[in-house]
Image (cartoon, rainbow, N blue to C red; front, side, top):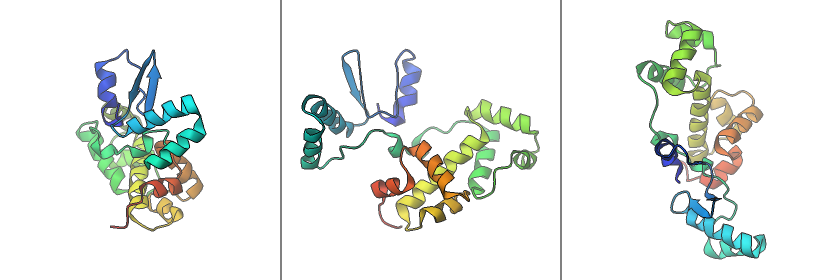
Length: 194
């Protein structure tokens, strides 16, 4: 199941074990794949299982496909997902998006929206099922992904541009969100500067 429809599948089939990060899932004799390109991952998994990793690797090279893909996570484009929340959380999200480089300060953020920190956290969580800090981190990663894909800037420079002073901490957060370190992500998704 493609990451784009994973939430909908989980909603429609609450007893299903939906694993949106996986490219190929086998259970109870049934195998499912992510999007249409995951058929290659499925074929390589079958070859790996029956003929070993060397044959699978050679087959991948002959077929011009990546035999190392293990997750859909690096391909997720959160802009395509439905955006949760209503007016309050959207205003907070917009402010966070516009101030990515500022140090996260919950008290200052609460003051900006004239609510207590407790109210901010409660309302934001009710509307989005996440905290403002979690949203900020995903927004920073989204911006970093764009910069890695479209610029020649160094990882350290991109880290600073999205509000992280320590590029090591940033790289760990980036990997947590995408499943890849920033340099590996750039190698996979670099398309030329725009």
